[in-house]
Length: 330
Ligand code: UDP
Image (cartoon, rainbow, N blue to C red; front, side, top):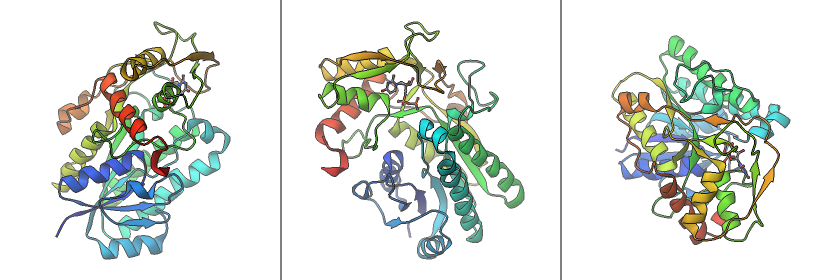
């Protein structure tokens, strides 16, 4: 019998690609997704249960039907701006519902957990590249919700032996290299898909949020990481937990910074199309530079990114947007 892995949020952008990779490696991905932001068409490699991760009856049903060995948790709201204007929504979904899921796991004796955390748990960087021992002082509710879950996980390990790997993502980007899965956020707020929307004429231009940051070209610098490389790190974390290895906290980035202008220029080169840009005010809560060191995950989990190059990342996204002009709605 296949080993089942519960993928909470498996109908979303990163979770759906994770399911594809799990299936390829011989696992059964079992998805629970509220379908608030998920897409049923992105769930192709295992069953989909629609509902809330903290619904005890649903958890009993799913854990009763599948031999779940571990849980990967991608189900969260992730808009920083919205977390500032509607913090209740974020604390409820990202913290309270995650606690419900953890309680359900403990009730069923499942004690392996892989958590999608974020570089937003660090707040304003005191040094670059960020290392895992950097102080965690998030500057918005979104980052705080993720840090609270990391802290809960530390306590649950002490109390109940629940081992967890927290992966602190930098900027997740790109699409399935096979062209089958990709980014379809509504509303879309991320730089690369918006720049590609401008390249295909769906937007008149791309707004550059701030051009007076203390960076070489004045625009914000970020560390972009391909979703396939993120998923690969989850798989390595899973295999470590399945072989009774310890949990841990790891950054996931490429250690290379690209400014907003460099990203837009790369999108122009990849698409061969003009992308008009306009200067816009800074977006509140954006640090000037966020670049992470991934030395620890390379050293301890043997992670090797395959799609580290920015143009390659954008190429995979461009293929997805060209072949699926209306995302999953098509
Ligand atoms: N950004 C921008 N224009 C946009 C969207 C994003 O200039 O229309 C900038 C944003 O201020 C940040 C970078 O692009 O510096 C990456 O933002 P994104 O929303 O893609 O990811 P985040 O860093 O918020 O996770």
